[in-house]
Image 1 (spheres, rainbow, N blue to C red):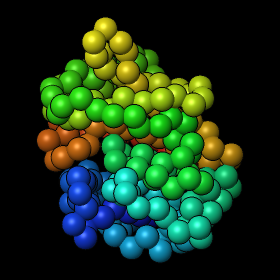
Image 2 (cartoon, rainbow, N blue to C red):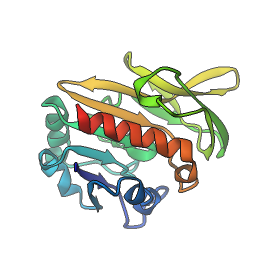
Image 3 (tube, helix red, strand yellow):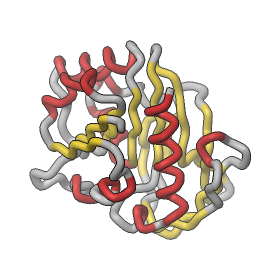
Image 4 (cartoon, rainbow, N blue to C red):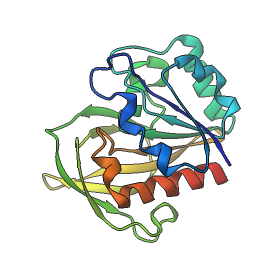
Length: 201
């Protein structure tokens, strides 16, 4: 059993409330899960095997202590799974490059075909899938390992990647604007693979 903390927002976040990711409670029922909107948990990450970032922090910043604790956690071997709005920590200057990319914008919510990289350890047993979601666009800061993508106006856009951060590991999954994404069996398989990988290394 792994200890997992999932940090999000419940106090009238503008776009992505924490209950969007509540389906993870069923998917990860064999693990010890904590869902919380208490950002003080950023300073307690060392107590957990995995941190799932689902915060809606586009218009607020983490405190200096919280940002430093997250960077220390990852630098010293922590594991982080960031889902969709988890990238919003980029609003905190000290964390703007943690993901290796920056969210730029997104066209309107639409049906997307997510193409998974065949033969990759994180996509084992996962087929390409459709999901209704926001097609996030990014500015890429560094090389990372892309294992899912989608096509938009003739361009291939990353939809899932993993990267090292110091001794730690971060995985980013783009889908997850609302619970529609978590109703997709193939996406749930992908999340399960990612959690299993991160908690097993």
